[in-house]
Length: 188
Length: 188
Image 1 (cartoon, rainbow over the protein chains, first blue to last red):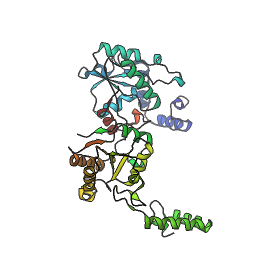
Image 2: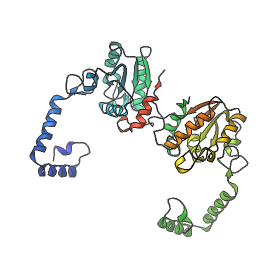
Image 3: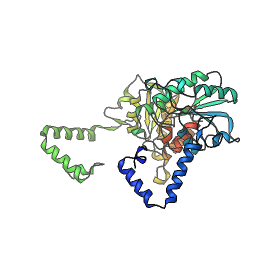
Image 4: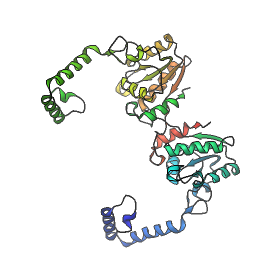
């Protein structure tokens, strides 16, 4: 219970419920979970190319040679890759910064994998860098910093800001609606 | 209580609470509410130009001569105008369709103020129509219909679809993230 309650979102009560669940189930299940956790600790490491998680030498995406090497999508964390993959709208590679610039929290450009990004853009023949940092204060600041650092070297694009699909203008927040207006697109 | 419970979102219990509140307060307050409701019924009418609500001959926006007459923003309902005004990013006029196309619900082009829109675009020297119907199925269908009807006559733009400000990629829905990728914008 002490170990379980260290996990995020799991308090003393949930830890107790989980512990009793583990005790009730066949011991193979607990051993399988233990093996998975041991494997996670021993085998998963940062991918040396994109800095997402890898089990083999490279992560499965970097190892996939059928992707478009001219496209490189920059994300803050590995957890952003899966949602982008699920859209089926992107077929390039990724680069994980490891966070977003935030001087208040002491996160400077040196703390992120920006030098590694610039090196990859040069080395891998990238034609377009898609900046997919979060549309938050720190994510936007990071996008602007990267655009400065990459200017003239490569085409730089940013995920569109605007109204989410299924939204209702009446309930849209001002900032988002303002962006949707400023970023309005020509209908052909 | 019977009259109050006819209002949307007000059930029997809320109606009772409101009625007792009205009984407790000085009678001037109830009379002021009654006067406002009478005024609403007698004085508010559709603006003959944009079909939003007007108290005088034209609504306050159509009556404002300092706006940019080359911009016309098309919305489904008058309730969408206030949020757009609050962004301070738009200085043109509006046109209220009165809904969105929905063949299933029996809403055809003739049921919306589309003929009136086309007439205004011709008569008022509009240079750009900003289609601000909701990013829903019916709103998108309406936007496409309007784009067809207006093609060649005027510049036609659509509010941007994408990630709302403050969003987190990890929790973005697939459709919205897909739109954000497809609609990505060049960072200068």
